[in-house]
Image (cartoon, helix red, strand yellow):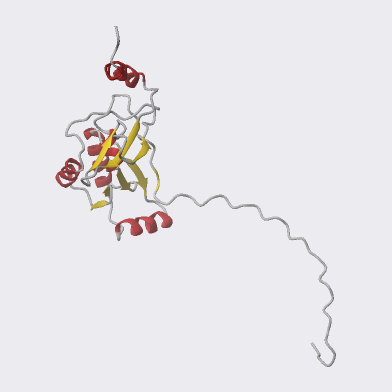
Length: 198
C-alpha cells in the first residue's frame, strides 16, 4: 500500500508539535497579484520567499499555529515602569488575553531617551504593535488594536507558556575593551633645514 506523503506529514505534525522539540519555520512570500502570504508551508516553487524561524516560548517550545504568523507579522512590545498602576493593568490584560509580548522597562535616563525616540514622549505604558503606538492604557483601544492585528479573541497560549523576562528599554552598553598600553617609540630626530629656526 502506497501512502500519500502529505497525509503522512499531516498525521505526524500534531505529534511532533506536541513534543515541543520541533522548531517551526515561517515562510513569507508575495504572489504575482501582490498579496503577501505568511505560512508554515513553503511557497509554490515559482515564488521567491523569506524563511523565518518562529519565536520560541521561554521554555523552548513554539507558539501555537494560530499565533505564530500573527506574532511574526505584528510583534507586541510593552514599555513599562515600576510603581506604574496603568502599566500593571496593561501587562495583566495582555497576559490574560494570551498575547505574547516583549516587555521593556524604563528606569534610567538612557531608558527614557530610548522611550522618547520610540514614542515621541515619555507617557507610560506604551504599547507597540508592529509599528503602531498606543500611549497610556485603554483596555478597549488595546483589545481593538490587537484584534485588527490578527490576535485571537481568546487565549491560545499553552498553560506552561512563560513570558520572557522584562529587559531595559535601552540595552546596556557593551563592556569597555581594555586598552592596550601605548608603546613609546623614540621619535627620529627632526632634521632642521638650513636657515630655519624652530
